Image: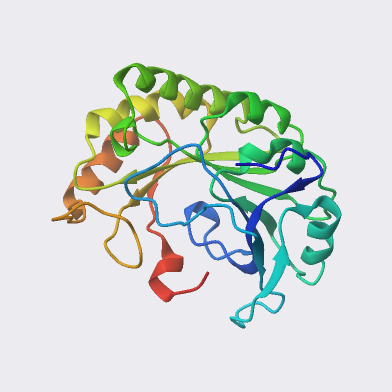
Length: 255
């Protein structure tokens, strides 16, 4: 959960690497990975629980981490990001960074902010409309979320659509949607989701779920077939620009 103090937040990791997902894959970024999440997705590959310290890799790619006490203040975070230069942007990821919208709103950085969000907290998203330059928004399909009740599904979808509307693409902000595609993903569900948010995004990224790395998966997991994903892309191209991009950072083992 976020810190109750708007001037500080529980952060799991701070490091510099390259973006591994979406249309900005390969760009150099500093990453701020917040602790805590409001969802529990089947394919999640991130341990985002709160801890007493934040892992800070001052020299990128070194594998040497300094333990910084949590919670981290706005001023300390700004200072820790100073060694990282020539950045495309600072990625705010998690967990779910929107849980710390009040903290993010206070950041004063010289590079753009890149929000990686599950897009289910519209009241928090509303606070950051003027702060964020890039929105990498997930559309978490209800069937991919553990223990979600039928009555919660409709609210979940409505909140997601509202977040995309609030943080929609405009002249000063890019917004795109990522949808994880696995063996059990229903094409009709993906189409309905894409149809709802297509007016608000520059493109939709179909992200194949893969069995490598530490991804949590069900017994008997197999990746969705190449043919199924290509057919899904062809269908979504009727709505908006749609691309198939896997998680490239997991392919070469970087953070």
